[in-house]
Length: 281
Image 1 (tube, one colour):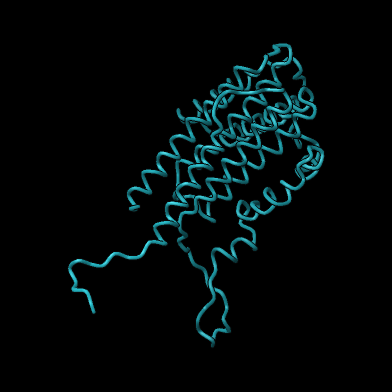
Image 2: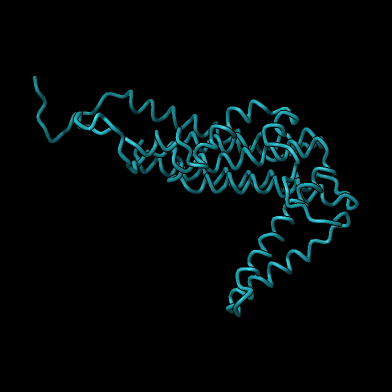
């Protein structure tokens, strides 16, 4: 199989995954019975599901970020969505309201900061439009339970505690926490990815900065699909939803496995002799 052929197969895998992930989201929304007296549940849970699809799609569409520099940032965001959703699902109404309150609190805080920044001068036309748009969005949030705006922690507990209560502490320990190193550029990430040992023994083999290139690793694409599948499963289990759409995750796994086998078979084939060179005897 040629590189062009491999690339076309990967392109098709990406296209199919995105189409199927969006179809799965749409079918789940259509099969979920909406209770308008508790609209915040449906909006928060629906938004988190859609966010997970968006993150997985963005990962799929950008193979150049399937590396240790950028992929963990997307995967950590997906871990955050999964933990938040599973925690919300333990008490959907109360925790959805907390989620909304915190988000609105942050929006109001940013709005006030922006107004304070230009308080002693006339805002530009662009700044005025931005402020008006922000204010209009905040005012459009007409939830009956809103009597105050929360600017503290939306859950009132740490992410680790949320994961523990939601029954996904292993996911926190082995996914969320390790990927946080890349997100926050912590020492145990930058030391591995942005330093190399100096070759000069007179310099005591100290480490020097570098910006290395890494090859594309489809395993990062696979992980994003896996986390999306886990999110869908948590939703299905809570609300007893069953969709007819094909699983984007399962189809991706089949496609990646087929591609891997094809490449392994090609590597195992003996090299063909070059017809332009005479055979040796």
